[in-house]
Length: 165
Image (cartoon, rainbow, N blue to C red):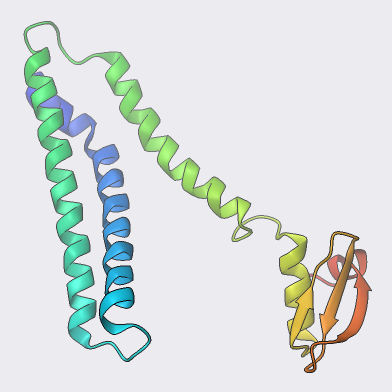
C-alpha cells in the first residue's frame, strides 16, 4: 500500500481523539458564549442545544478532515524516500495511548476514580448527616455546619474514613 494511504490509516485513531477533544472545546466555547452574551440564566430554547451540538460536530469533522489531509500529504511526501516508518507507527500508538492515559490521570486527580480526597469524604459525610455545609481545615478534622452556618459537629477524618464503604 502506498504511504499516502497508509499514513491516514495509521493516524486515524489519534486524529479521531484530537477531533473529539476539539468537539468538546467547541461545545464548551459555544455554550459559554451563549450563556454569557445571549441567554444567561434564562430558559434556553431547544434551538440553542442544536446550535451548540452543530458547532461541536462541525469542529470535530473539520479537525478530523484537516488532520487526515495532513497525514495524507505527509505520506505522499514520504513515498519517494521509503515506506511507512516504524518510528511513525510508534508515534501513532504512543499518542493513542497517551491521550486516554492523560484523561484517566486527570479523573484520578480530581477524585472521580480511585480514592477520594479527604475534602470530598468530609463533604459526603456531612451531607449524609443532613448538615448544610462542611469545612475541611488541614488539621485532620471534618467540621459539619448547621443551618445557621455555625459548627455543629467536629469529627476526626480517621472516623470519617472508617465509615466509608
